[in-house]
Amino acid sequence: PGWFSEISPMWPGEAHSLKVEEILFKEKSDYQNVMVFQSSAYGKVLVLDGVIQLTERDECAYQEMIAHLPLSSIPDPKKVLVIGGGDGGVLREVSRYSSVEKIDICEIDKMVVDVSKQFFPEVAVGYEDPRVTLHIGDGVAFLKAVPEATYDAVIVDSSDPIGPAQELFEKPFFESVARALRPGGVMCTQAESIWLHMNIIEGIVANCRQIFKGSVNYAWTTVPTYPSGVIGFMLCSTEGPPVDFKHPVNPIDQILSQKSDKPLKFYNSEIHTAAFCLPSFAKKVIDSK
Ligand SMILES: NCCCN[C@H]1CC[C@H](NCCCN)CC1
Image 1 (cartoon, protein in one colour):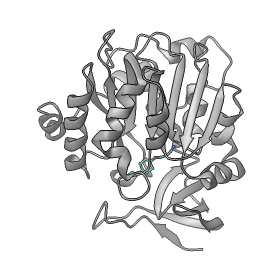
Image 2 (cartoon, protein in one colour):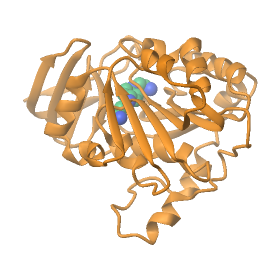
Image 3 (cartoon, protein in one colour):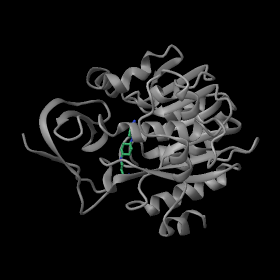
Image 4 (cartoon, rainbow, N blue to C red):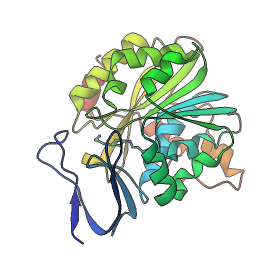
């Protein structure tokens, strides 16, 4: 009945709208407003504090890219940490790697987990993997308690800097991620839109170049239901065995093609390499930091 418009001070003067068939869930958690609605064009939609988090139709683009850009870039991921990502989509993608022995996930809002299991079973399927351990709590505190050099990869699947995820975009957090990674370990974070947030991206890149002494690269992809239709990722590695993010050493799409597993809908090795090609206005800022 009517339309949902994604109005936010984070993208002033513009708003993506989706036709609403039915509102399926609407509650306030300890951290944010949580809503699920059935849209006409993109299936079910998860909204937190008025911001679209994922839709059934295009979540594959974001979840596959944020997981496979880092994990395809290292030869043998064993221990992986996901910060945020309570919907479980990133877990679904990480569990495709037979080399992975342990997947920790730290999500601050239990309601996101429960709502995803109830309304997005194809996304929350990630929780069914026996290697997964769910921690409900603040990712910043979780990382402080982690012994150094614990993980091969840390994936930060956060919402945006306004709200509970604010400190996941700040220097102390990136320092705690670098400490938790083994030498040559990799981090991939949600890094906003080059059309909307070049200033935020500039800050993130500057911080990452100071903290991560391996490679630091920005990649981007298309997600039609995120504002401006694109979303970016910060790919960083710690000092140690070199990581070339642009040329995957562990091409998951080729590994999977030999298995009957759920096929990848979006990611492939060519899209991986192409994701690091930037328009000039973004290259100028990102490569100069
Ligand atoms: N596992 C899916 C979680 C999605 N994370 C974020 C949800 C908010 C979204 N805002 C985009 C704002 C403009 N860049 C970015 C991804």
